[in-house]
Image (tube, rainbow, N blue to C red; front, side, top):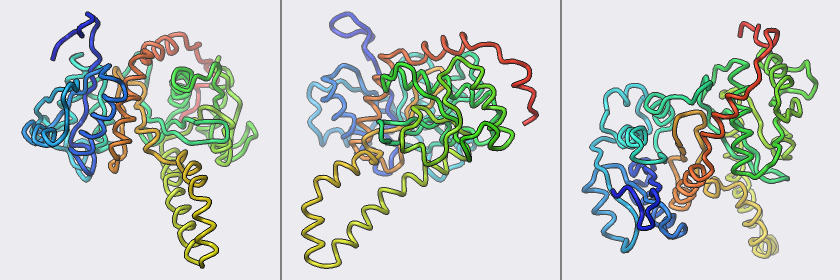
Amino acid sequence: MDETSTQGKKTIRISLDAMGSDSAPRNEIEGALEALRSAKNRFEVVFIGPKDDIENALSEYDTSGMNYSVVNATQVIGMKDSPVSALREKKDSSISVGLNLHKEKKTDAFVSAGNTGAVVSASTLVLGRLKRVSRPTIGAFFPSERGVTLLLDAGAVTDCKPHFLHEFAIMGGIYAQLMFHRDNPKIGLLNIGEEEGKGDELTKATYKLLEQSNLNFIGNIEGRDVLKGKADVVVCDGFTGNVVLKFAESVIGVLKSKFTLYAERGLREKLWMGMMRGTLRKILKEFDYQEYGGVPLLGVKGITIIGHGGSTPKAIKNMILKADEMIQQRMNERIESAMEAMQTVPTSATSSTI
């Protein structure tokens, strides 16, 4: 792998876990080639996995002029593997090898549609945390009436403390600024009511921290406000966030099923649905995870993008492009600067025992 491009600039390299998705390595290969075409070879994709298998699969595609390389990894962490055990026992897995390349600065990002727990754990252990970040957080994207809403945390940290949520809000705000182009992102705290005194001890203590911060904190928001786009960034503990995420993922399937059942009622309904197909497709597209690709793991010393196990080539493509954009935006430098500038938290706001 060359260190510079023909123009003398350092080439961006993105490690791709070629064995992550349910349809690996074909979906990874097709998605990566689409990303390279879309970006006109602006970066290099480094496929990580069994070299012979990847190269045999690549031989079936037209890769002439494509900027890629292959790094061998002899083991694969499956979706059903215990993350901690797998990382300990499979040190030559595509996840471990890819993240170690990133740690050694041989690549600039890591992308995987593999075992989420393993990717989160390995990213934290191998890359380490950014300064003043207590816990890395997984973001999730939700379409809303006003654009895209980012929810943190979506499952990385189920047992949270108030200052964790404060940090999530800071990192989410930076992400929304750089990736959503929101000048002063609105931060909302997910709660069971809008009033300040609502919620459990975690949300009450977190409210105080966010209220005293320099963030554009708009207060508590309820579940119904997420899709309304009331806030650009919604913060909550990982248990709650993952429940919200999994519920939202089921919505598009239910809607498609309802549309199909409606069309089966009779000829008139079938014709009506046929006339509406284009409009419905555009609406449902906003709920399609493929459009967002994957979710960022914020707070680690690197760029990690995590995708769904069922990621299609389109989703893989968008994951890679998102990683490239985060690199270009110097995401981690901005997060570290924001964390360093974070105001000293008053004692009264941190005195909770939770």
